[in-house]
Length: 117
Figure: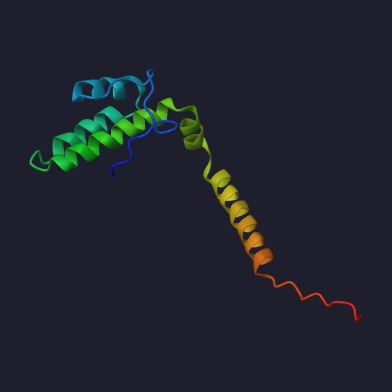
């Protein structure tokens, strides 16, 4: 699992976020609010981590903190529930809009001729 940036909603922690400053707190948060299987995967990744490589332990904890925060964020949860087809359709629509805007800006406008005096 790769590390995710630490953020929530608008980038700030809120009082409603569960405490996740220690391994015990993170385990409790994963058990209560994590996605199904997160706690077991977290334990497995942590068990396999090299304790001399603290950056690896940090990456794991950050990634799972992010998953709890994502699960608590209504917009994040809604985004995760979108179907592949829905996301694909939105991306196509956005690409079409961008291409249309690019064509509009790239099409030179003919020079205007002034009327003879």
